[in-house]
Length: 263
Ligand code: ADP
Ligand code: MG
Image (tube, rainbow, N blue to C red; front, side, top):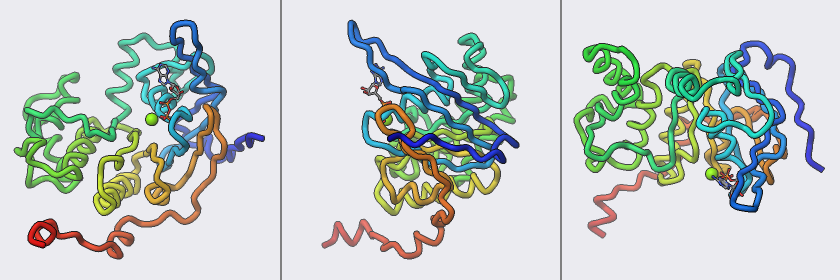
C-alpha cells in the first residue's frame, strides 16, 4: 500500500511550490515509460528537503519539472503562485533564471573559464553592469569560502572546490530555491559533509533547498525526507533532528594527501 501523503496545513503559509497530481510519460518509440505516476508535493519557504529513492524511481524527472526544465504530462505546478504549466518556453526560461539555482553531481563548470567567470555566467541574461556582475560574483564566491581562488580554473581546483564554484553560480541571481541533483555524488565523505554545511548555512539564511541523494548520511542534514518509489511518493516525513554538518565534521578524520603519497 502506498501511503497517502498528508501535508500539514501550516505549509500553505509562505508556500513556494505546490505540485498536484503530476504524471510524466516518456514516449520511447512504441513504448510508454511512466516516470511519474501521480505525485503531489507542497514546499514552503525555508524548507530543506531531501528527495530519496532507488535509481529509476523518478527523482531526476521530478527535479527537471521542479526546475522548469521540463513540463509534466498531467497535473499542475505552481511556483510562488504562478502556474508554470501555462508559460511559454521563454517565460519558463526567465522564471528559471530568476528563481532557481541548479547544482549538479558533475559540477557542470566551463573548463576553460575561471571560477569568477563561471559564477558570472547566469548574469549575462540580465541587464546587470559589468561592475555589478563582478562584485556579485565575488560576493557569491565569498559566501562559499572561495574568495581566495576566484582566478583559478576548474582543473586547478579540487572536486569540493569545484562544487563550491557551482554553488556560488547557483546563488548569484539570488534565487528563492536551490535544486541539487546528487551534489555530493562525486565527492569523498568529508568533502560531502563540507558541501552539506554550505547548504545548511544557505538554508539558515532563508534559501529553500531541495536536494536529491541516495545516501542516508547526506539526507540526515535535511529537515524533510521525501521517498520516491516507482514514480510515486512512498513517504514524506519531517526529520525532527537534522544533524549539523559543522558538528559532524569535527568527528571525521582528516586525510592528509601528502602523508598518503609519502607512505
Ligand atoms: P532517478 O533519477 O530516480 O534514477 P529518473 O527520473 O531518471 O529516475 O527516471 C525515471 C524513469 O524514467 C526511468 O525508468 C527512466 O529510464 C525513465 N526516463 C528518464 N528520462 C527519460 C527520457 N528522457 N526518455 C525516456 N525515459 C526516461
Ligand atoms: Mg537521477
